Image (cartoon, rainbow, N blue to C red; front, side, top):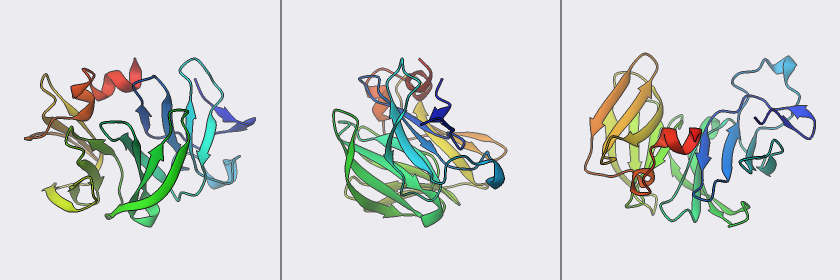
Length: 193
């Protein structure tokens, strides 16, 4: 699918968020490429049309960009800036552009992100899953015995939080409903359909 930007090989595309109009957003940290093999001297956030192989660079000011997820109304895009220890929030334009870059919350080694229908942002961090209200206030924590990498809501009602960790997958029943579930799609369907 997408392998290059302006003729240069991408670093190692990591996480994906698909908007309801089909526009695909992804992060490109250097986790899967040796430093001497890198062709790009930055780590980017991109978007690409579903039928295209030509991504548009949206931002190149991250240090290990990682998980990303849209707010329920898709007006905001949250992106983990892993090496800097925070999640950034952008206003997302209908044309795919990002603006109004601001720090949303701090957490240690943020990785995967998902959002519930109330707009709460769930972030896989060093020791578990941190939960933040839409205004960035910390509202909850799910402790884990190992470091989580990615998270997604699933099951028929969208209230089970699936947590992919280093050696295990956990399923946690919550009182929340994942924002993708409300639109009738699982995270896997949104990324892979």
